[in-house]
Image 1 (cartoon, rainbow, N blue to C red):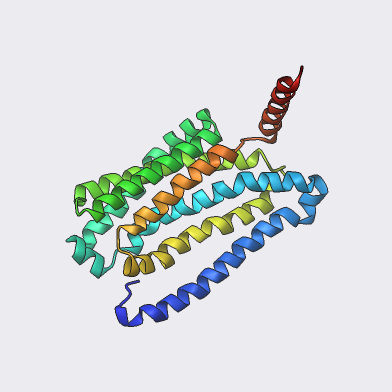
Image 2 (cartoon, helix red, strand yellow):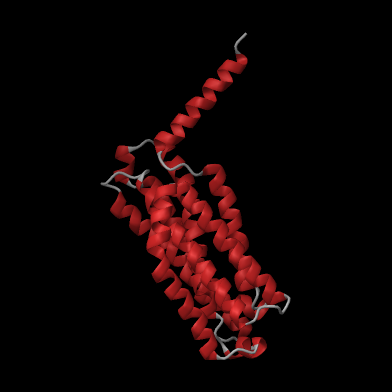
Length: 258
């Protein structure tokens, strides 16, 4: 969608309305995850809140994976192409290179992520994807990103995302019983789908108001923030969390011993 100056305010109104609906949907599924009767019958409220603090940062990160995957498609409009000196065919080549990168490397990155563990896989994916987007955004801002650089960094961005695909499944499975996983998959997908909206609905507004480079700088920066949050909060399993909690409590007691 290309936004003309004359229609910007009208389009912004539509974006605000749809964004509000998306935000309410996300808030609703988060509330449902904590309060639904099935989970309430199995786990205490404190446990449900604990695992929310685990999976929510991964869901936000994955939404920004989607935003940084489809941002180029959202920016494939005449004004952007003319400003960059690229053709629609070259934009299509960038997008195609990204898709083929994912198709070829996803089995390998998924295997590596499985071996290193879900937490490390998500951290690698978030940092790699975030930095790739930040570098690409910076180069566009400085007018230093040519066609070859565009293809390489966008494909590198997609490559890093492959580490997160299997990692997020591995982490979430550790916190949900087999009875809960089907419901949780629906909850989680609502959050992920918001990433599509951020790219296809939000990027045209970002381009019109801030500039093309910010469709890379914003998700890139947010993914770095998500990586730091997951570094602090993310535990692969409840057992790992309680083991570390017990170790910390034991260390505190030792420090207080006469």
